[in-house]
Image (tube, rainbow, N blue to C red; front, side):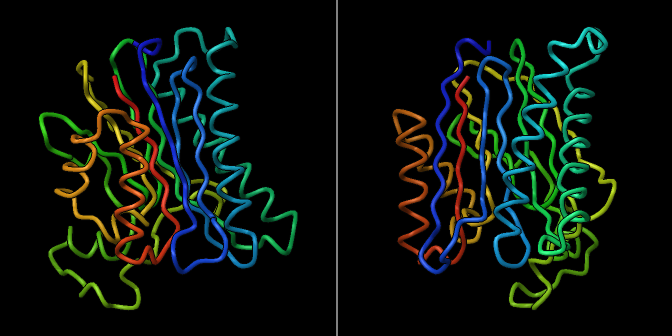
Length: 242
């Protein structure tokens, strides 16, 4: 199915930020697509997200060509790729004092023969868009989301609501969540940084993506919609159509 995939991605600094700490990358031949939202002082967030994306893609490609991984399931290849990304960001942060404590979210989609596996670390999300709906595949790793799952939700204006509880590069190891899906022809999968969800509810995301005739136009319209609401953060959208 990877040969039939349509993909588009777009990233915008938003209306209030002066630099874009989001990154994205993909390789349609390898069937891997990723979005990362960096965090850290100065330019550290940009560095962290860039390393996370490049390391993930590079290591996943390596598993496709190295005979040692010949019988390795896709979800294990993806797990190893995120581990490699975490180590790469962490090592750079330890080696360079100006990058101390930098980190990044990471959401990655891998597709082969209609089977999809998604890895998530942080609060960037993956959505499955099918039959007019947008279903969140991933689980946010933030204090706000975790408090809600525990039955003791924090108010949305709580100062710690958006604090990330799991991120790439802030420690020597990190545990991604892994999810699987069987894609149907015409399905779209959206990977997005939290700058999108801060302004657009799932129903609006579904409406915009399903109405757009192409994934490229859908990405443009999603970002236009966020900017119409003030775009308080960087926003990145990556759409894949099966």
